[in-house]
Image 1 (tube, rainbow, N blue to C red):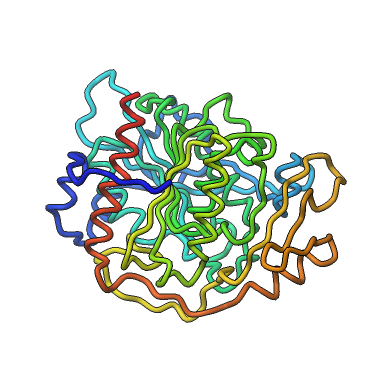
Image 2: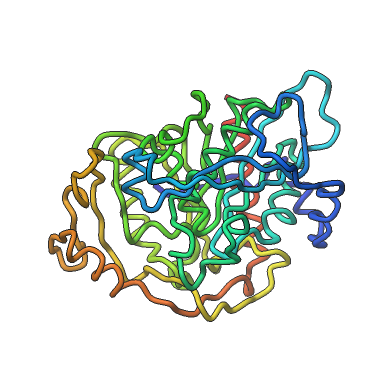
Length: 366
């Protein structure tokens, strides 16, 4: 199902007229300081600025999904809360938790999305999964931080942000980019959201931008549906080096056919990271790409139940086992160069902002 949006989303107008100067981060984070102790409750503050909260580092997807908590390592992570200006007394505003990509927290989190969302009346929480774990980036080695740590941090961010007295807990959304886009997609599914106790609070919607989880799929749709609507924004299939966009779309069509509220859209001429600040072209010589992979399994939840059900190399239509899954995955996963921005990036990015805000605003009005 392809998605078409109107070009008239009013909440994006201010951004479209503005130039991205790169000063939003500096202006928004004035006065921020880290706190000595992790925060579990924001009911008495701080209401904005940098906070630290408790999370966990699960070693792998299976241990996380099966809730084998004794294998998780505790960690204190940091996040920045940006509140919109001029909140009326007694008003609760919608909020977005931002999940960064493999490059760590980059300028787009603040100077693009922090600016857009704050101007539209949304609070923003940018969570840093890497720095507290002593890692700068995972572009060339995704194993530096286990992937489910990204999911756990996002769900723990939801747990903490939901206690903020100015935040509407029924209107908290998750958006993410690349590896964070995979996170924003996965947090929509009970298998990946439920291991973290959020006292019943769930995301109201998810925006996954150029996600990287399409080609190696850990599926749960044999027994569950998404908790909330999902919007996936994809790069041009001819320009995306990190994933096979057509495989993504085939998977989404399967999920939609099963009754999941998922919409997706391609952006012709848009490269990976089409929301890069100032639209500039960049070349990353070391980017993890699973574009040559097409493999999947259906997660089994019982501890000790093995790799999963219906484990398949779709490219060869051959079943995989615990012994063959990893070698096939390693063989088709490559470190390659990756292009960012450039070309018609400004046009693409403006449309991405419009489409994202239209999606969030439509859910906020429900």
